Image (cartoon, rainbow, N blue to C red; front, side, top):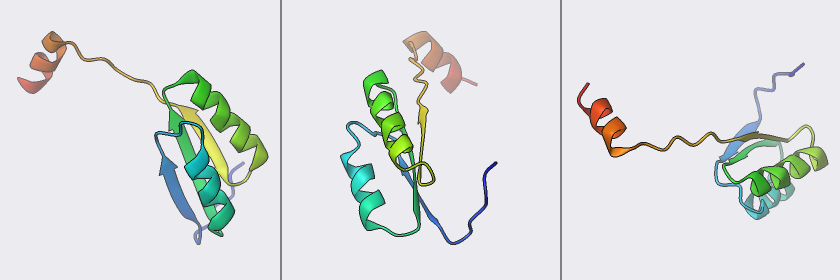
Length: 79
């Protein structure tokens, strides 16, 4: 169960990559939580490892990427 902390900064890293920026934030900013995501499966595995290393402060999810075709894009813009 999640415990709510109101005095905590949440950083969204939506291009996790190798995780260098997220790890630097975790090491240098007190009371921070990093929510990491990446569409690359290898980067996502790296984010999972960081979440294991910082179980309270790091949380990761895969990004689902939608590819729009020109037909789909046209139908959305014409709504």
